[in-house]
Length: 112
Image (cartoon, rainbow, N blue to C red; front, side, top):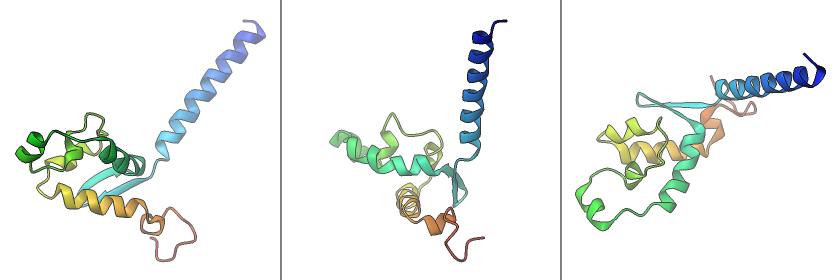
């Protein structure tokens, strides 16, 4: 193998390792039996702003509109099966903006 091939192989392995490392270090929120990624919750507001389901769909469904969004992350989809989906989404969104609540900020007190 020449040095270019070794370099490409090494770079490819490094990229794979970085992706794996990043996915294992994602922050997860546990709330009322649901475990979701912080990034998914942070994207909720964007999804809600860009999604305007038809008035007929809104009238027929008791679920929050975001539950009908085709790009809703898979880790948030089980929340839609809950009768308390709207309140759970509200709570998750408020937690996502409070890093002390999530204990991701080392300067916060009371984190366990």
